[in-house]
Amino acid sequence: MWVPGGTYFFTINLLERNNNDLLVRHIRLLRECVEKEKRRRPFKIIAWVILPEHMHWLWKLPEDDCDFAMRWRRIKTDFSLGIPKIERLSAVRAKRGERGVWQRRYWEHQIRDENDLLAHIAYIHLNPVKHGYVQEASDWPYSSFHHYENMR
Image 1: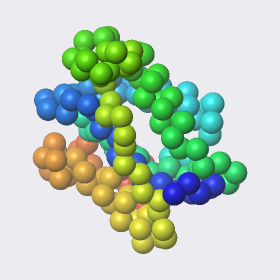
Image 2 (image 1 turned 30 degrees about the horizontal axis):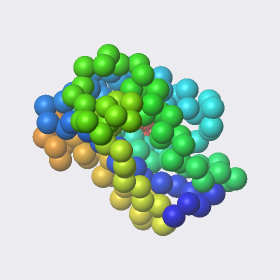
Image 3 (image 1 turned 180 degrees about the horizontal axis):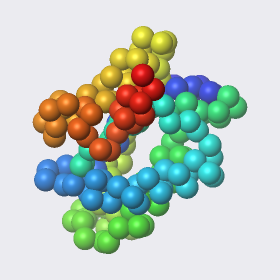
Image 4 (image 1 turned 45 degrees about the vertical axis):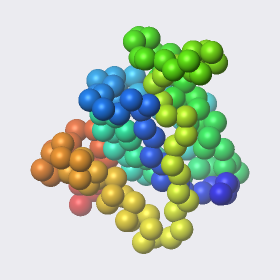
């Protein structure tokens, strides 16, 4: 569902998820790619978490814009162009001239109301605990949890 000014939750995965720490290893590049896209086509980041092989984001789009797909395409492309070409390529990806960094698709969910928003913020911030990376959400450095914690 594409709604101008909508708020969306996203899950973005690397293609190879097993023992892959690409996102945290290249966290600076990922952040630069997101900021670059925000300058090209603004959006507000409400909450985020970056894990080694996947990430979750909550975005609020401008009132006259619903094109989150182009934003994600550019972020993923910019990130892929910024890292060395060391990934395994399937025959299909090689034939298409694609990289083997990201899963082609991602999951999005339009936020319905305040309760849905708060549930997704909590899900994002607790995700590193759920996956066993840390005992407390505050211990994970790649998250907006610290921003929310400092607002108390």
